[in-house]
Image (cartoon, rainbow, N blue to C red; front, side, top):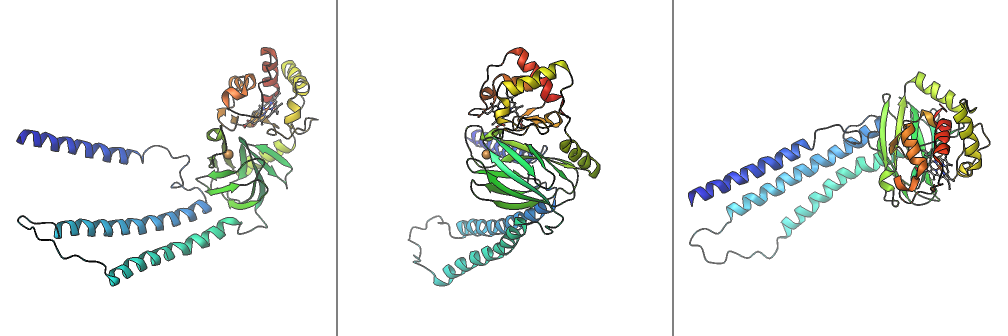
Amino acid sequence: MRGARRSGAKRWTAAAVLVLAVLALAGCGQAPQSALNPAGPVANMELQVIGLGFWIMLGVGVIVLGLLVAIIFRFRARRGESALPEQVEGNTRLEFVWTVIPVLLLAVLAVPTVKDSFAAASAPDPSTALQVNVVGHQWWWEFDYPSLHIVTADEMHIPAGTQISLSLTSADVIHSFWVPRLAGKLDAVPGRTNSMWLEASKPGDYSGQCAELCGASHALMRFSVIADSPSAWTAWVHTMQHPNTTPQTPAAQAGFKDFATLGCSACHTIDGTTFQGTIGPNLTNLGLRKGIASDSLSNTDANMARWLADPPALMPDVIMPNLHLSKQQITDLTAYLEEQK
Ligand code: HEC
Ligand SMILES: [Cu+2]
């Protein structure tokens, strides 16, 4: 009997240690998409509101649970007690107190929440902010820099230390633009323009994700914000504005022809060429990108070949059809697309 109780206690201790260890380990590892690891002023501001809410809730939790435990012990039935305790039908003063306190706490939370919501909607200095128009598509993001005449997809280069003004909309269903380390989420809604701003304090690669269920490949709708140093930014803008579009190798020359004849140009634009389709991503300087297919595959020749061979196999419901390309066509198209950088 004793032994059984002791091993029961051991089991409980082991379970408790395990649960605590799991909770503690959940905080380990890298956090490329954590709002708790902010990398710019908007994310910092938002983390402060999260922090305020956290401490208020922790305080409420400790007080309420502490009172609960104290009351359970203080008023428990003692041995030999059988009479019904005094029955309380209500207490106006207590009810008043536990209504007013939450109202006050919510009012305290509302002040920075409302203030910061307005502050996050538009860049503090619109005259120096860089404008980027963002369009969500099933399942990729289009980034249009009107002042620079650059359009790209899935990788948004920005200069570090600069405010970026974003205007968000969608070409089909509701998406949500979210780069957790730089700013909170904002919906991209068809027929509407929502605005927000963000800034990366330091150069780096900040990963983002569509945060609104938008169809079969929603989970693959990733993107990156790449914050460049001043020299890297100037170089990127120059390369994007002056793409080298003349195919160099024989394979690339064949790929260039295929691109025109196999229907690719009906959906894709390559700046500096006659390819001006707008249904799919702008592929200018595709070889510069680190990812393809909404940043869900790394940009290697092998992955490009897999993608061209059967896009719907990698991305369910994608608009780009399986064009039943031959091995040769895939090799040539890959050579053509990847050499542009
Ligand atoms: C009917 C329109 C359509 C046609 C035709 C089409 N594509 Fe696409 N393509 C798309 C769409 C839409 C995407 C975006 C997929 C996604 O990420 O959601 C895409 C994505 C891509 C990508 C990845 C781009 C990126 O931003 O990562 C490449 C490369 C590509 N297409 C090449 C081609 C080539 C080469 C052809 C011709 C053989 C072709 N496409 C034909 C619509 C089309
Ligand atoms: Cu989406």
